[in-house]
Length: 190
Image 1 (cartoon, rainbow, N blue to C red):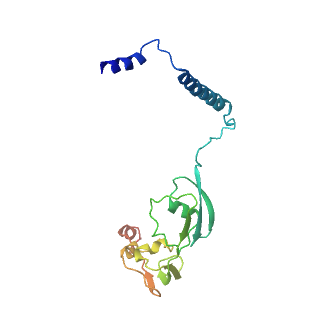
Image 2: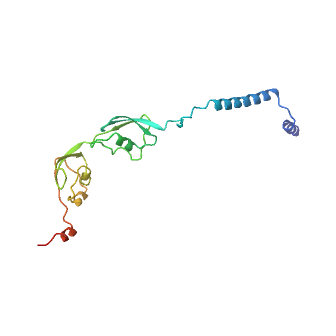
């Protein structure tokens, strides 16, 4: 057994010559590396225009359809959120954005279909800039009404603190805010 061990050490001794096939393999590997290095040096892409070159495109293209003013194909940066993409397509007031998660990101080639919510009509009167019928998405809350109508400066903001759902065909009267005590002090007495 010690004889086998001595033969293995004999192979590692300095001055031991490589066999011809070992030299050929070593020369082939080294020349291949040299050839690849030279080829990569002379075959550089033209970057003199200053534009960066990417392995993967930094933009994605998506198609947006449904309840948007401007349906079509759009190009966005990688990592853009779905809701930001939909905003660029200008969602209609009836657009139902509740099914989209706020942190979801778009993928290349994705088709985004924005569904429509059923609309109801509410008549609004009182301390608002424009009285009359108003279309709002079904299921809207009274507290969401200021998003749909311009209020006058005299409108009572406390009126919109109630969390009840609006009903189709109902008439709402927006009251004026009670006068501020400071306003009473400035009124001249006769």
